[in-house]
Length: 143
Image 1 (cartoon, rainbow, N blue to C red):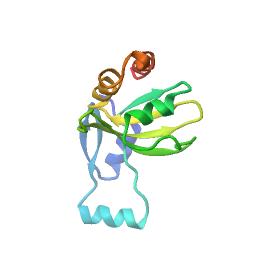
Image 2: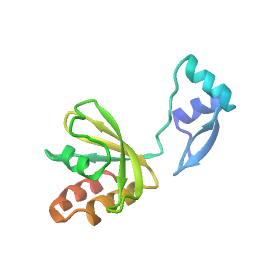
Image 3: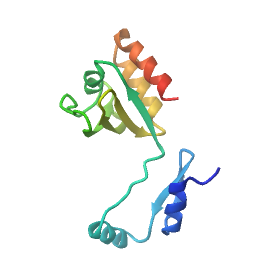
Image 4: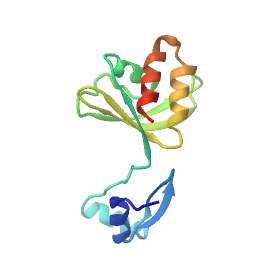
């Protein structure tokens, strides 16, 4: 697989790279103490390129996602973000993600290996056919 520009930058900075869902990302830059000091002296960049992306569109996108997750997204707003967890009807967590509010859509970044589980669970198992069209649209956009 060809190296991505970010992968080359990580490697040049001394990162130990591991593969996550087909993408090489940093696991470590050194010891924990060294990484902790570096974060507190400056800033940290987290490579989430191995996360899956779900795009929600339509006038009910915020209500739809709000009803499927553990965080209150009704006041997310444009350019807002929130951590979300997807649960079964019994309260078991099946995926976590980051919801990002944009002017005309919501983006949800989800751990790449769990994106399909979250979609199927939240849209087919817990909700009736009212949301089938929304799920179909999300599934098409996530490919």
